[in-house]
Image (cartoon, rainbow, N blue to C red; front, side):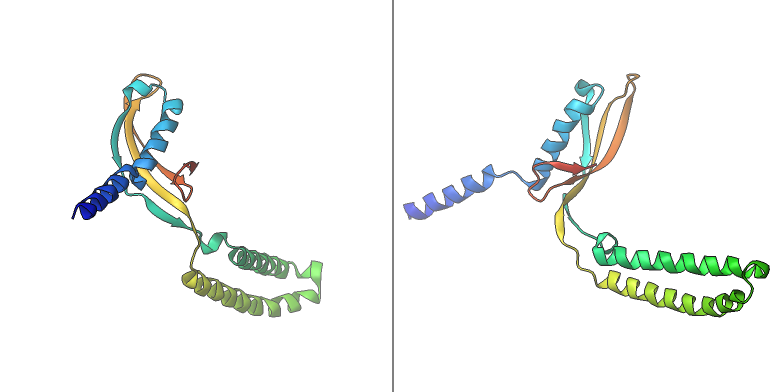
Length: 164
């Protein structure tokens, strides 16, 4: 019986010593604010959202970037051909080829956009860290108390702020 009580006490003690993600995030944010605020002594905490996971997006992936580049090239080519069709004197026989090519290029553009949309829906991002919305009150340079709100991004271990 004594062993069980000691074991429970040890587990509770270990668990209570570990900081929550919210506590870690708030500590990092307040450390940064100490150096960046105009008047740290006027600082007042207002609220903080729950710390939430952040994942990569399809837009930032290599495949997403490649498809967007192809779409951009197709759109540029369509615009070039549409403008070229307005100047038949400059292009002669080529105008008819451009006019015939525009619907085909638009079909290719639509197909590529559909492929992009499908892949974006199916994309499962990689975990890259955490984020939290943070609000605080403090004096600005003129001594007027204002409320500021920012979204902070953290590394997976919540040991540093990666972006704001």
